[in-house]
Image (cartoon, rainbow, N blue to C red; front, top):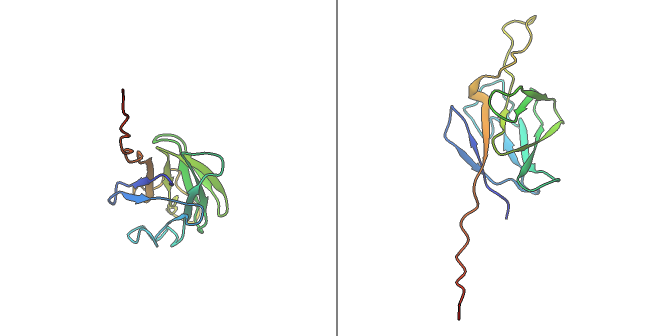
Length: 135
């Protein structure tokens, strides 16, 4: 069975997801209707990483860049449409860099907290205890 993950946000309740190869998880306004308008309806996908258990592949599919970083405080890496990055437990995903204050200003380096999701792997459910006969 595929591992279960939680997407945490300061702006909304946690969401449990179980990405599979056949059914990647869609991130964006389609799955989080209260997201800001700078977030694409279909912004990014999460699917199992081909190279290992316990990792996911984040792929940016929206018009705006998708940010990823290994932990809070680490620098953001911004993915363009079609680019992917391997993510795992504790990573943060930003569904938009935000809007520049004016056309001549650069895009902000730090995204608004309302568009940031923290990825947390859920522990597997406890297996049924196998009873062993000792004699």
